[in-house]
Length: 236
Image (cartoon, rainbow, N blue to C red; front, side):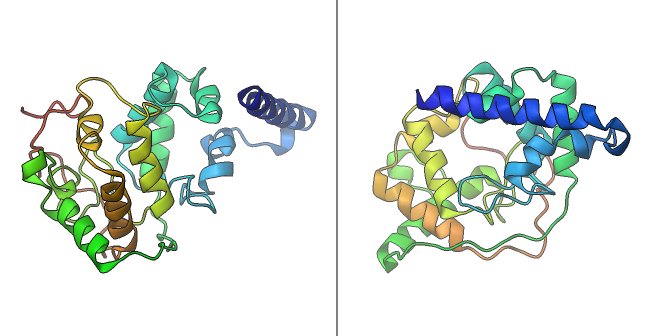
């Protein structure tokens, strides 16, 4: 019932927007920014992120990553009612257009609160992010997301500037199979080797890490991921 109510709310919002536009078409510009109003209503005017810990920043993320996420929602590999409904009718061409728009946005990062965390947990989070845990087969976050954790072109996202709630929720989603991607799903493999405490620790360390001066994703090929991912096609 809750899922049905959310879907009905989305439908009502879309119908209201359509009716409002058709009632006075002379005042509604036919621009991409206008057509993606449904995106910016949750993710911010320029994709800077919503005013909570769960609507993530889109601005400046690699376009290939953004396209992949929309495709994953459409394929049922990621699950969130509103997103699944919004992307269902989109063509791949339109997804690329939307992704390119947000990837080109360059707006400041916001700061987010971080829950109280023990020094031991912060040290564990730093270990996982910078060195990994070889004994458990867990590579460092930096091994794939770049040494500055700002992502790597064309499709590895940055991890800096993300809220604790978002990072921990996404890692948890891989564990509960509400987020996945095409095989081989390397993040599912990694998260399967982390404890709840590990997820909390690395999320806290990432969330409190200062945003570097240069937040752009590193060039393609600047890192060689240690495991093979379906999105990246990296060497085994």
